[in-house]
Length: 133
Image (cartoon, rainbow, N blue to C red):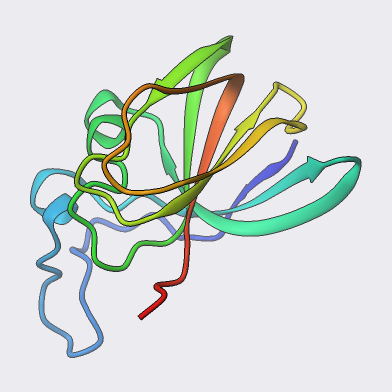
């Protein structure tokens, strides 16, 4: 299996580097998802990245919206299907549509404020792009 959780289960709230409770937008509405090593393939080349899993409707709805700094996100769906996304309220990111064996079916660099971006897959990996300032 290509997913491996690196976070211990805990009932304690998440904290930022100063030791106070996290105040980002997503933390107000949902528990911070575990970090997972994701192994995926682009043109037959194996790659690994740490990502947070978005497997509930709330996590999928919020995604990268309103996030200043976010780790890559892995969206999990129940089967291979056509997935449609947008980039409203998001910083630029790379979208990788992955099949059930984690092979990329489509890779797109998504700019802000775009609608109707689609690709086919069971998983969607969104990787925030570095800012160009």
